[in-house]
Amino acid sequence: MAGKILLIGTFDTKQEEFSFVKGIISSNGGEVVLMNIGILGDPTIAVDISAEKVAKAGESTLQELRDEKDREHALDVMTTGAKKLTLEGYQNERFGAILSLGGGSGTAMATAAMRELPIGVPKLMVSSVASGDISPYVDIKDITFMYSVADISGLNRLSRRILRNAAAAICGMVDQPKEEQEDKPLLAATMFGVTTPCVAAVRKKLEAQGYEMVVFHATGTGGRAMEAMIEDGFISGVADLTTTEWCDQVVGGVLSAGPNRLEAAGQAGIPQVVSCGALDIVNFHAFDTVPEKFKSRNLYRHTPQVTLMRTTPEECKEIGKRIAEKLNNAKGPTMLMLPLKGVSMLDKKGEPFDDPKANKALFNALRKHTESHVKLRELDYHINDAEFAEAVANELLTNLNN
Image 1: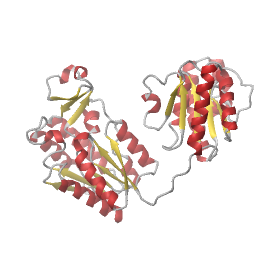
Image 2: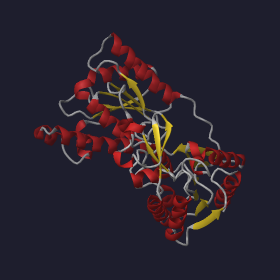
Image 3: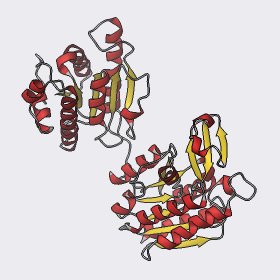
Image 4: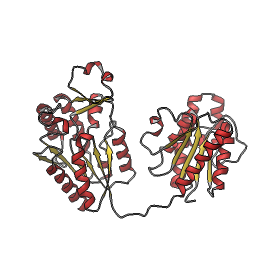
């Protein structure tokens, strides 16, 4: 095995199941570290990280949690402690993968700990909630879910088969051959369907120059995932061409990446080229989900499940101001590039979101609020013109090579 596996969960109620999984992993040649996050009783098997240690890491004691009988507070304490000890254990190379079994509470606590680990570390959650909406548990990390079908309560013909599969899966993840390390620096880019030609051309040129590029779909979680990878040190430079998530953040659409978008690259000091991709678009789900206050706006049914709304000049002013403020805090080389003939497939002349006044308001706000240490370059092209993509790629290459 390439590394130990952390088994984390409520050993007070699921000791039998965790013991079974531990045995399967051991029979496959794996080593296991056990962390108990249950407070109802003490397990009869030895664990490496006790519930008392977890409670202490969460700034309480196991006895206090038992005496208080406040379930919500206990969950908060044990989750905090599990997150801290999981990250510390990984950083100290005590394990290289994580597996848990649980119902609602166990899944919430265990996946919170999993989300502390970097992308690429094997993370597997066997859960009775896996057939529903698991986005709050996964968020922006590569957590694999396996549906337990029945509740995780005792061993039987069904549960043994599912738990065997889970144990074999995590062993396979850990024991896979290591990928040969390449010297190619990793770059990031943001893309929407309406900016695909630009990003595809930029990626092609940069990869021809010896770089690899990861493209993130700017759907809120995509932008946040990119920011997290930058913070984790994976990324050497960014072509942040599709900053559309700021439309949803400012106006109230469904694909916001939150108020910290556009911070990670600047704080890391890595080169970034930023543009205005899809800043004409606010996103909603199906047409009948669009808030009543927006029903009279310029709406475009992109698919039966997706409705797009054109940003107004006033909204574009605020979006431009917010983006400029974020870029002003950058510590590394930062270039803002304005495509003066349009920011998406939908705002070209004659298209549904063709609105020169809104684009002018956006560009004026960016000019006004961007400070002098942020380079500003204006090009008389549409964002999807080949010439604009060429200029973006050349600018990023120049900064990467300096």
